[in-house]
Length: 385
Figure: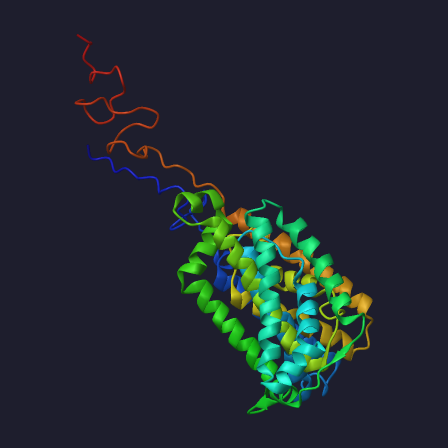
């Protein structure tokens, strides 16, 4: 037979996928297009800031202020990106930051830091965050509790425990070495900004260049398929929440250095800022897709927006409304792009049925020993014997 047949690609394959018009989902449906759109949005915000607050917005001190404010939210958002890509959600990150900061600034912890080194405070904050994340992961993965409910319960419990430990008081950081290190700068760049950059870089490598990252995408895309592929989904889910807790501990250390305090009020509504930044960055709330670069851009967009509002003496209420509108628009855009990329491909006429010989007609299988394209019961046009 001289007729050319087209094989149907494997299920789940997106390589070369095209819609009925023969065109792909477009540039904006890919990570490069989404990140380019975020860069354009950030540049537009900068233009608005430069026009409405000339001289103040473009000042070096103001730019460094934006980066310092973005650093804490950014570190938490990196951990949140992993959790959401893995198909979960973590509403407890703000409370974990508060708990970690309080535990790391108790009199006992600071006394140990004075006797040994201020690194004790850092290790304490990270371990507290990791421990709380471990509890979240075990309850969700092995207790089969919905992530929204489990982390909401941790939010209330961690915030309450922080209030009990601090006795509803603000604890002052006494170690001068701690404050000088984290409050200093390297070549004019604040240490907090450098920490944010390092965490983001480490998160990018972990997500895009390791087996852990590939498993995260697999678990978030289809947990059952990941399990059948040999991935230990429950254990991996636990590690995702531990990772989120670790970033909360790091953010607590940064917040302690910036405010020189540990308080049960730290991190209030931080979970909303982190989730908003991750969503703005293009991570799907249903899991399976997301980028660290997009998250970083989302954090910078939110922080720059707040700075522009502040410089123009606009109320925080108006800023909250603007953030809400941006999040809704981002989610609507995600759904539109996802729907466009998942548009079914029109089957070519005469395409072979997967697993059948070349030239076999769709809906029928070739009879063993008969010519290609013959249907069961068909003897190639000859009457049956």
